[in-house]
Image (cartoon, rainbow, N blue to C red; front, side, top):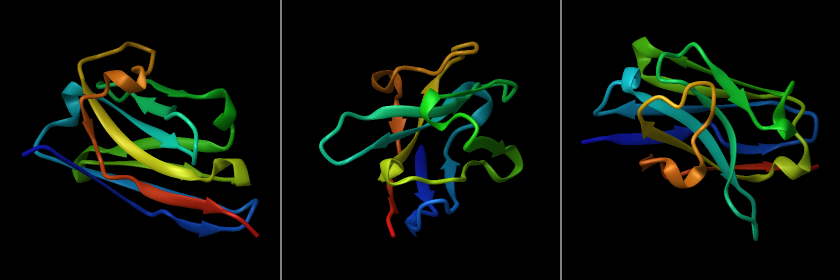
Length: 126
């Protein structure tokens, strides 16, 4: 059974950091493009970052470039999102998701992801 479980969300002050984790089970990361997507209150879901199935390529949305880093640990079947210099506008539910196949250097559209975790809340507030 394929499962994705996020953890690591919480409340942080502006300028602070958090590291999100997404543990995968039931499938091999070698065949999936995996990514982080967020949804703020009253807004549409938006892609944040992704890693190619080979693990050799990462992509970031412009609004997180230079602040967020995505990486994965194949041995632990886990993907991480290191978030630094967090701002109130980063407040959202963060989801990890997986899409079967290789999208090359590009992230899938949010609607293309096949499997989703339950989400973890990130709140940036003083």
